[in-house]
Image (cartoon, rainbow, N blue to C red; front, side, top):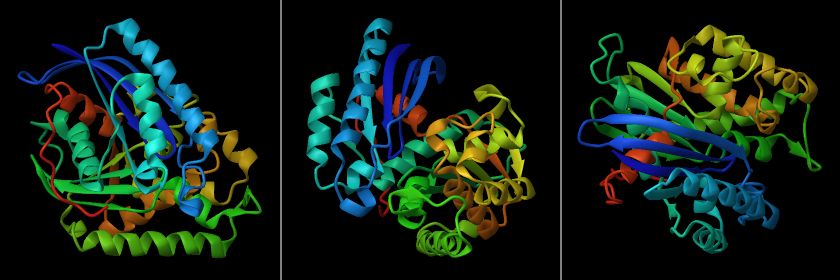
Length: 326
């Protein structure tokens, strides 16, 4: 077994996983898993740059993660950065800061690599299950982008598109520096149009109609699942592999889109960092389900972070990933 640290730095959150893994046997023991909302992608869609305060929030989280990994005796670390840092003109400031704190170069991965890691993390444990039809469509709804990956044992097609809960919120719901509460019908229609256009683009690479099981990843999906399950507080074990029907997703999305900030914040399982962006994330999930005809979404707590950990266990060998457009 090898003790590895995996860090996934996205547009909205930064997450750490410390695990013992054995690539030869597939053994996996989860030792420590945590997440912080740092909103690295704050205003990137508008300015094209990472804001100084967003960088400092992210670096502060990195310092805390470094102490955790040192205490647990991590042998190998991989740090993956996704949509916001791909898009930013000053991403070298981000790379330099992470290197100084953690002693590793962050890998600013492509959309194709992001898709591959998400697929590995979400599906590795599903081997042998005969209750899930294949191929799977793994959808990872992030803050700045959404990855769609079709495959069975291996990836068949992948595409990353620039729709995410933070990007859609900042693009369409922010006026005079504040999020509209609740959004107006024309604002919702504008988000929906962007999502539909992105799915049209994704469909050129990924045959969405071939999917037989939809697997949903990341905070927007897991939060919708937590609401659907009526959880008083976030419970990863209850959420992992929950199956949420389309009708329930539609009902929750409508509720979120017609709620005020205070009403969303009062939902018991709602993370404070998702209050302003969850409605956009839920709408992405709903629109995708309607487009693919999925009757339910299988929610996975194992995602790109777990995929990063598996690759970290392979002596830091660079994975051979499929090409996909970012």
